Length: 168
Image (cartoon, one colour):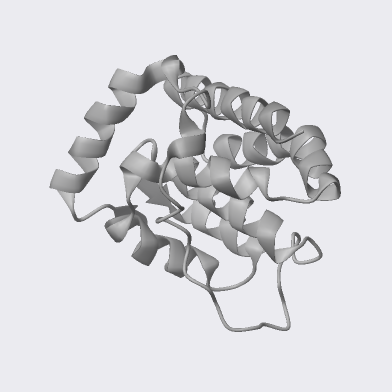
């Protein structure tokens, strides 16, 4: 089973923007950026919150938004990726991601990640520093890793590190 994004115009606009940004994405001018606009929608409480269910809701939001960015890179949200997302964030999260991807404000995705990161408490920031890369690497390898996906993962992690440096 393969999910392909249905709103091609938005997707290609984001794709062009993403390529233009490349590794040039920086947190230097984000403090004046607008408040976050592409947060994943809130979900009702669940009994099974997934492997990451013990983390704070604020940290989970950062991880979810970063995960949405990563799974959208190859324009496919495979069943393997969906299973990984549901295992990590709880059942039904992949379906919520699918709904979110079609309406995502891709232009502000990194700005939203930044604004969420700088408000995290130190313990959540430490989790990002120590664990986010291996967590996201597991996602990217779950259905086969392409070079461009690895490059974008490294770009995202560099951006997260820069955001964390600015937050402290």
